[in-house]
Amino acid sequence: MINRIVKLATITATEKVFKMIKEHQEQEKANLLDKRLRNTRLLLRNYRNLKEHTALIHLDIGELNQLLQLDPINLNTLEVESIKKSKKRTLIMVAFIEKMLEIYKEINPKRHDLLYSLYISDKKNTVQTLACTHNVSTRAIYKDLDLAFKEIGSLLWGVDSINLL
Image (cartoon, helix red, strand yellow):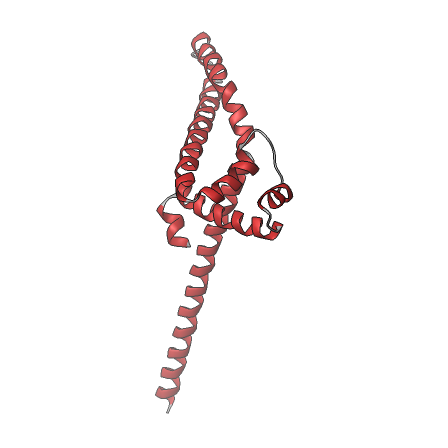
């Protein structure tokens, strides 16, 4: 009798532990997806600023190189190198976003146009303007944007984001 109770308790406890582990893994997966979608949104929302910043970077990197040549022993060299790396990463990221947007245009021209109109083009548009232009509700625009963020996110973040969807 006691053996059956211990066995039943062990089975029940094991099942609960496995259920908790599975729930935790699903939560981790959802958090990672949320983070990537948030990062995609942040990149696109800040694209104009990043693009504007990249126009000035080439000049800045030249000035930083001159500073390094003037004072190679200075402890601030590490800081200057860090700034250079950050600026170079910004250049690379903007170029990468542009390439992925070109690819996305081939995949889904309609949603690409929405992303382009809202975040990339020189003319800043609103969701309401796009809804009027496309003769749909703002909710339809938001739904298309949500799907566009997921799709472009898979291009930006690679196979890991596909596994999460």
